[in-house]
Image 1 (cartoon, rainbow, N blue to C red):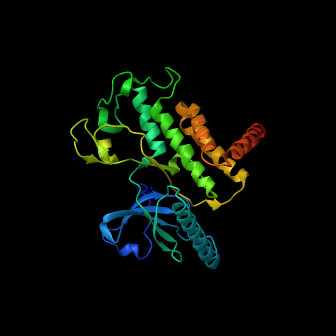
Image 2 (cartoon, rainbow, N blue to C red; image 1 turned 90 degrees about the horizontal axis):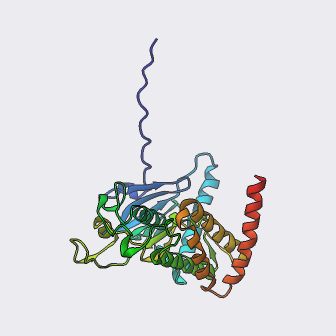
Image 3 (tube, rainbow, N blue to C red; image 1 turned 30 degrees about the vertical axis):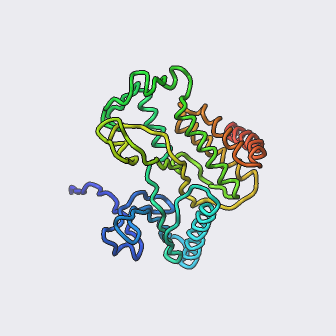
Length: 302
């Protein structure tokens, strides 16, 4: 007997939590992670976009334990964000919270991640200033063959240009400010660092008005300018221990090495800026050396 099987269908999108499942327009799924689902929605009015983060229940946990853990974790993340915001650390603002239901509304950060920005920049440099298929602008030329502003391609001159070094400096300062107020992130990667691009005049191309990051993309521009905003504090906590801060830096260093090898040398600028960012930073950098040694030993032993 022949058995006919239908092709596997895509898994259904997660349903937003109450009361957002009744919202119009309905929240749109953005990211589905292991611990949380991220949606784009609006706050009070459709003209005010924001981010909805929901920690769904885990069916494998006892219902009472699950409810307690979910409430504790969403409250802990919200409190950490509020503390950072109050102390001047650049993080998304908390707009609303449903601790019992496990959801939180966050300010929308207009821009992209540092990971996205560095990858686009790398593609532009490798193509000598032209962004081809799959890049920004669909193949428009945004600079001469030597790169925008006469910059040399990464790997050809062995140097990293001022634009990237400026980005590294701002990353180090942002992480230093967070550590100064006694907060450790727990998952510092370039995916959890946003670039909030400044609104400014665009004189190149067809745009001659106040323009945002989205319009820069449409104009075929690649920019690493803007404020560093730290996001995703799901694993964050409050700590004054130098060891915890050093581990944060080590995780970020490994992320740069594995995801952005072309600019790995520029991480020295992150550490330099971090070392100048607050009084106790130098001690943390000394502890980072010990964390590195333990990491190398672990890699060798397996």
